[in-house]
Image (tube, rainbow, N blue to C red; front, side, top):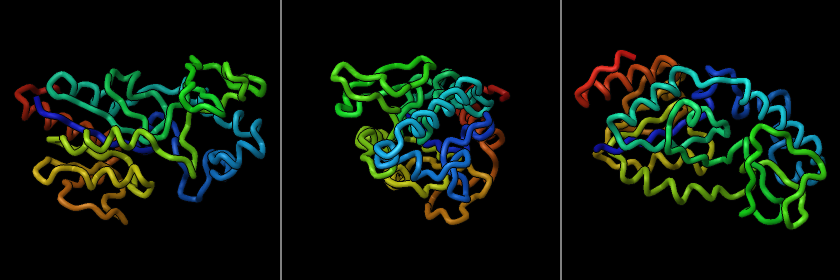
Length: 235
């Protein structure tokens, strides 16, 4: 069974109505990212940061997987699929994908402020000032903020290195270390880059470029892959 690795960014969830990363003007839902997405911001104004992510969590709850999420999940019928996402929502999982690595954390998890190994499911609940872990520290979103390490990158690298097919969807490849994962794609692998801006400012080679939104480009590629595997899904 061929191995497909899929790298997804904010453009993947945009058609579900989510702005999962900062817009081109440097704002994220009208907030400067450095006011809501750094350890310093949390230390300075934890209530603002918690409220910001509580609102983002509710947006995810209200959103639904789009047709691109659903199409990617169908690949598991014929391929060994791993999705490596920069997004903090759970739309891939809700669409049916079973192996998803979240490089930048997950909006529906909380963790201890003093022990990052203490992680708790929120099940849609808000995090409030005074909510603590068993060690007594304030809970924070289980999100990788600017200036913090990206621990899941070490798990992601060997998965990309072993891929037969690589799909890159809805990301400008401007945020590191996530953007560097494309450099680990084997030279013999099939490679597709799906983004409406095409390769504008993106320095990658040997990728078949599909300058479409996820909702159009993903369906096209998935249908081709499934047809080539011997079935027609007519997505």
